[in-house]
Picture 1 (cartoon, rainbow, N blue to C red):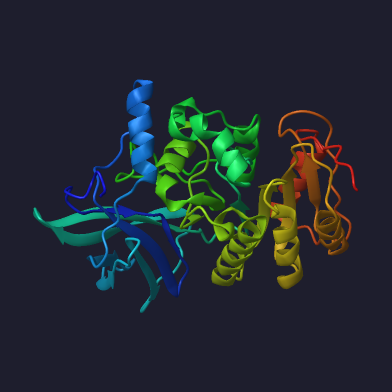
Picture 2 (cartoon, rainbow, N blue to C red):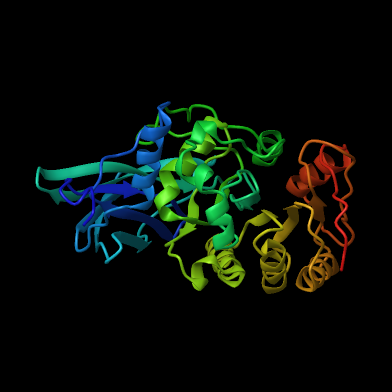
Length: 372
């Protein structure tokens, strides 16, 4: 029996995103109180983090979504939470839904009823600006934060303390990630600062999307981490997590990332993307598949290396990316060392030139990965 089964149903919105024709956003119906990741004792931290994993989902909850068109016209849609509590909206937009001049967040409203009567909460939908041609798709696990929850059951057991006691402000980001992501993001947009989810959110000039094998249970945790480190916020594509081969196996990670990246590219056919990942979960192979399936759409690939030799699959992926003329960086540290980036065959526009300039100025190190 769940510890939270008597709590009133609440809705946890996830970040959404849209183009001029479609809007996608998800939420989860839960029987628990919203979590506040404040400084606390280890015992309270353990209870807080356990509550994130031992979630009490509410099935069959009718959730409404109210969106407001740029001209002020409102539309309302409905969905019902599934057995895991998820309610997903994939809406065909009617009328004029032009993208804004600059990247920003639009506010929507999610409504439901519980024992206390009608309830509502704000959700946020990111919309890339008309002034950008480059966006970023990034991994989270071991790319900007060492999660300890992917890469196999052995890692989960070894990193139980990190998973169940350390709160977002206790975790360390990968060295240099702040400056690297800030450069790629092109700086913050003015007037987007907010104190918490539910108020105005920060946004970078170039939109960020996060594709991770972390569970949806950790969405509030990961948002708190990004905000605390002033890293770019953006929609997340996480996973419904369980202790099985499909969740923990490397093939599952790569498949999830390939599907999620394809979905983003399909929604924004006019944008090119920089892809950022690491060498622990098959990111290089997944990115190579994207390069093959979407010729000309990938501006650069960045892989943070943790010291293991390249596998045969990764060698093939490296060859595929370089053969397509996509700049590829394999490095161990975002901050230090000399930079080398292959650009042969790349049709450089202003946005891609900024990436190349960063690398060539020596801000980032190309790693000494060995091929086996």
